[in-house]
Length: 164
Image (cartoon, rainbow, N blue to C red; front, top):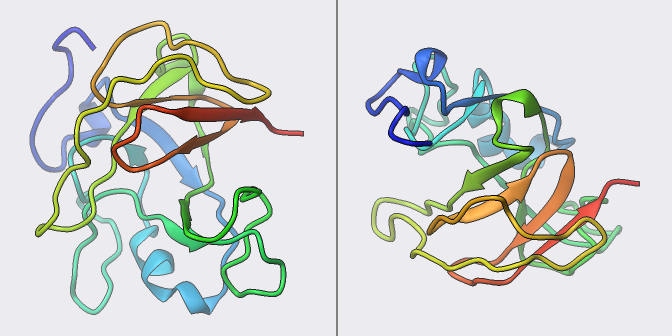
């Protein structure tokens, strides 16, 4: 925030805006891309792949990977934190909340080089059991540390639920 972020490839470990993470998403070999790209993904940031982050079939990731999920317990894409239905992309990780701003942090989707960044949004107050208003304004989604954060591509609405 306030222009303190470092721009450029492989600067995550010295960037005060890069938040340390450790992936904890439980997936099977069915998600080989996620399993490959999550290796050595140690920061949540806006700089793309990290220097030693895993590759899949020689392709570097475009950032922190997500997995396709559903709330159907019979499907291989089932994730218990998805209570919303099929078609939600998910990542679960532990993060250093002390590196966030009052437990809030920015996220934005990036699909691929043909689509690029998610469009700017204007997020208001979030619904849900842990919802509320972020303490700052931005054109990105704002998530709450230690919570289940739900956003939709290009949408202003958000849901933040407490983890039970």
